[in-house]
Length: 432
Image (cartoon, rainbow, N blue to C red; front, side, top):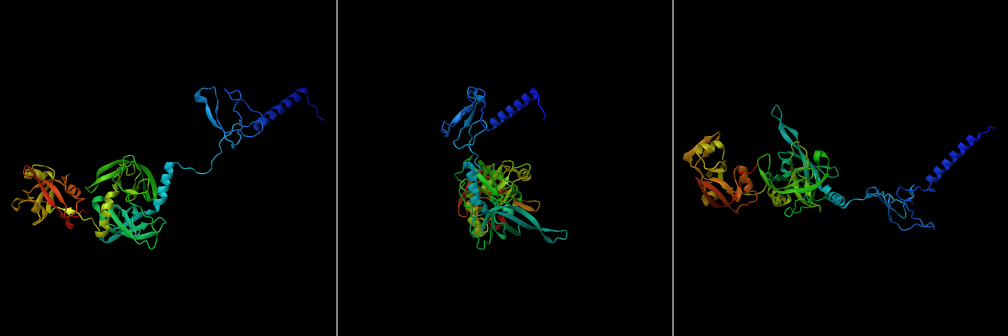
């Protein structure tokens, strides 16, 4: 049998003592004091082994406040290696109040948003019409019969329209009508007995800057994407790439990207307050400045689009010519912005109101057009400044036939006003 020296025996005993100490410390039989607290973290157990009431103690009492830590004690908590109790981990998912609103609105409304794709006709080298991929966008189902509200630029010039529903079904749609002046259009598909989710129209008259809004759409073909933000501005007049000005646009910082066009802008009650239409972006992506047509505009024009395929608007019976520098200089006109009344329609409302057209004896040719000089120059209609033909469309956008508007003109250097009872805008003056 091997014999151990006294030194080896002593070392072996010390090693066993250290191991026993570490073993006891690991099971909580021995508690180390915390710096600044002679007794460490106080136990919540009493002498009978029962748990004492839950309290909040301070770890590091006597230390500077920056080094103190509030330590929750819990009746049912697991014992920590330091002798304290911790709150149990809740594995269930909890949502903030704001998150709950977002979730509720999305779950209630997302299936009422559709993805719209179009095909247009193009011509090949042999001048044969061939189909070509058109625009893509979003739309809101607004009627159980299958009517969908979207932007005009999404379906413009489309000969074929496909509508993708929430369940992935592709159905064929048709363009019912459009209102280019507000960039709105209505398409329709056959529900075939489906129970559709309808996006209800709210009101845009009582919106406030700072109010939270949510946008649902199909940006970059990602179906029914939700983005959130606030209303950043109201009453914005935004000029489109065609020169028209859409009045009272809603500005929002909710991310709107290509493919969002035509989708709904919702309030926290899930009501549509706008139709997402365009973004301001030097890069082509959302930079936090998006615009939506107010839903009150849609509520005003959609019934007419469905009934007539267009919006019936009032008109002044004239042949207008937009002023341009060469014309102003040649005719020595008193203003450089406005609409020259080249001719009045015989028996029309302008003539009856006393507005004067140009003279045949002062006719001049400009390009392929004949312009009659000497007529009145319209500078304001119904309180809206008119410097271009697009401005005239904007001024009469919300006026119906039979309504009376005030028309301000310059006759020579004299400013005059006339009251004109509007007629119905003829087809040749419909905006395209």
